[in-house]
Structures are given as C-alpha cells and as structure tokens.
Image (tube, rainbow over all chains, first blue to last red; front, side, top):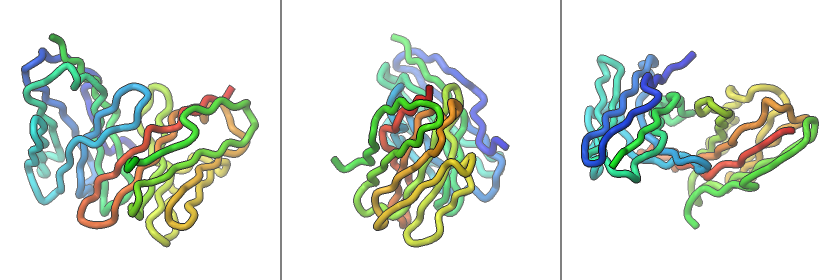
Length: 111
Length: 114
C-alpha cells in the first residue's frame, strides 16, 4: 500500500533553471511532510519540511508547496546547481511516527 | 560529531548467521527509528522507539528481526539466521520530541548476505 508516491523516477534539468519535483499522498492523517536528498552510499540528508497547517515553506533555493485538498506537494529548487544531482525522496508522517517514503526521483543537473 | 552514527558501515555475512547493527542517535533525541532500503527499492520502515513507550514493531518483516534500545540512547538491530533477501542498507534515524518533527539519518549499514 504505497501511501506516498513520486511518479517521476527521473528529472533532467539545466544548470540555473528550476527543478520541480512532485509528490502525491493518500493518507489524510499525514500532518508533516519532508524532502530528503540522497547521494549514493550515504544516508538521506534532510532538506526541507512543511507542516500540514502551512501551504508553503522556503529555505534558500528550496521551496516546498503543500496542497492539502489535492494531497499533493512539490519541491522547487531554483536555481539548480550541479551539486543538486542526487535522488530526492518525499516523506510523510502522522503524529511524529514513522516516515512513509516515496520511491524517489533521480535529479540530474546538466551544465 | 553531532550526527547519527551507525556501525559497522559494511557487513558481509553468510546465510544463517546472526548479525547485530548499532545506532547511536543524536544526543538528546528521544525518538529512534530503523528503516531499510533494499536494492532498487524505496525506504521501508522497520521499528520505532519513543522514550519509554513500547516500540512500534509493525514494520519488522519477520520474527528473525528484533531491536532494542538501552538507556534511551543506543539501539541495536539484530537479524537472526540471515537470509539473502535481508541484504540491504539499514538506516537509523533519530528525532527530538517536540515541535520539530524532522528525523535525521545516519549513514547506514550495508549488509550483504552471501
């Protein structure tokens, strides 16, 4: 039962342009959403999060948007940099419990 | 270091042997989680400790898997009679209980069962 879905397995974007990663969820009990970045052979690194009481959170080049009615969130990275090339995971939790992860999106930033 | 640490970083074992994986959470974090990522798969929840409460074991795939957390800090994940399908990266995360719900991950233990 995949409660968090990332339907795009990969994304290629030119350096300097915007990267938009999408995530959908099915469980209306989720109240906290996170994005993690993962390099090969490393653990996931926390990027940015958003509580269900908000619809936007911004941190530097990273902005997360939450649309509760559509059960959809997105991560915007602007401008994209070569060091952003990694796998990005969307995750969600309810009441501080376990995280449910999406399958990940491989981002490649090209010069 | 102030992050979550895990040991060993890599473990190769023979089918049928027992293994123990260790996690040192961030100091002061009362919640601790174990996940795993099998090859080509997403991250899968295994078990969750929160303070002195009974752990949430709902993600453990079989009774060969167990975990404990001593003194509210270090945790050990034990896999008995390992099978080849147990090969995966085992990740530990910790979280400070409070308004911030972010889980911070360790580097993982790469387990290979031959």
